Image (tube, rainbow, N blue to C red):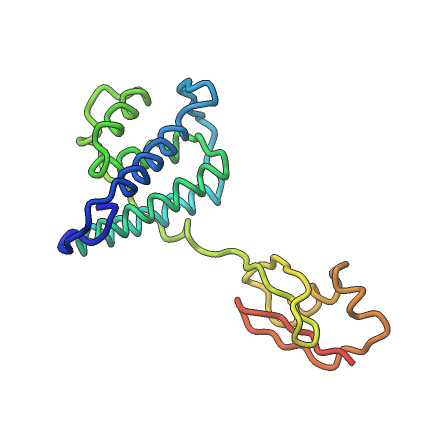
Length: 200
């Protein structure tokens, strides 16, 4: 499943096995601390953690439907990397993740499921439900350009209208040196793309 679509022939490659092993090891580490002690928190998950989980739920649902298991494995790797970067060890995230990985890595899923305190098998657990509201983008990281040259990035809420975006960009401290002694002639704003300030 890791090497590509099931219906295609693939060369035997031990590097593929090594890549799979590294992924499974990284997945295991989400549940354990530096001393390899089981360490899962009951703290509520953050919005970015929930977003990462629900993007994966959608990818897995679509992948299973189309029998594209390699795309699911790829999505799993992206999700695990994101959660590792966020240092996420929340039960609210890791429990559904264990259920979702069980068809692909059944032995490690069963082991982790029991470490999470369950006495029944992970195969009897309900598949997590996708919640679209958890994956909605609330902000966008705009590249801010002056006369067509990108100078800095600025995170802005997607609910802002053009006038609000313009005001926020012109008021940003990073804009000061590009505006000094110049007149703003035009502001080009493309939602979820770019903001370009034309000065002269």
